[in-house]
Image (cartoon, rainbow, N blue to C red; front, side):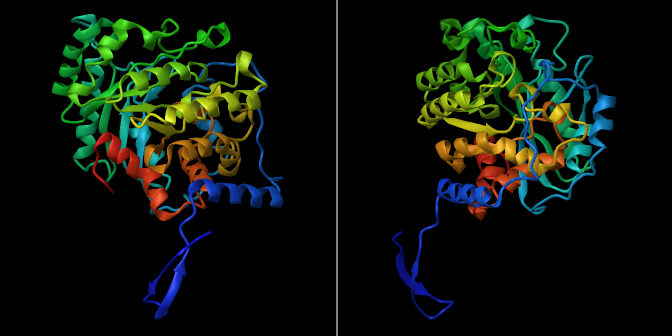
Length: 397
């Protein structure tokens, strides 16, 4: 390894400074060290039951289950974190998750300085044109953000940015919906998500939150509506399952001026017909992630791996997993993304409350911090706050 010779004021002499190793090189060293030490205490297993959808426990049962393991102390508690992906909702099948619930989760010791709300078909308008119904969600969340901005609910700027939804399949008319959301968003509206998760297996397909045809993003009318985003300075959240990543790659190449954020490391499936095929699936997924990373307009969210669709058994255990267990399972998804995209295009996310089916909020961030234990200070800044601040135009911690 070559270095640079320069004056070192600390020693008063010329010194050879070695270049900082890349995240990839440090990750490889860590893998060798962990392999030598062994991982007998870590428990990672695949789900053994039938895929129950994303919500296998109701609010009461989930709270009781999470309480079985004492909350861990937050690691690196002073590290500023922007949580760029969470939801608010009140629905029979999903329960209620409002500001008090999020604040309870945030209270575990991590330094969450701000958050980004992601659309979840919550509080749509009941009356008016159908395409304008999602405007109600932005209005609803902007009200919560205004409550948080008062400072009466703690220092975290909750929903500092808002990602809504617009039906871009209506073509150019989607611009009217986007402009309406900008008008009610209080300066917080940043873009939309149009989930296109689809799978031919009924074991998976019946649980999607929005039913769409296969290849939706290649539809000309979809793209006509999609084209309205960039001129308004708005971004697009890409949510699909891993077999659909070629569609996401094609979309990113077709719209190089539109900022795209890949949700949940690309939505890797490990249930239904994908169960028991993880090595094969990860090989194909890594190839697609590498291709997607060649598109400079694409960023990736590191998280969502606590969703039951990834196929781990955490939700089936009598006791919730430790952050060590989570880190051991999730590392195989996190590190390839960082290696492909680089730290300046990656951001950790909580994806709460869906990921809450597998773990507590404090343990989730502890798991991420265990994965990045060998990263430099600048790399951690990018992963935990810098990338999110840039992509969503937020206050830099």
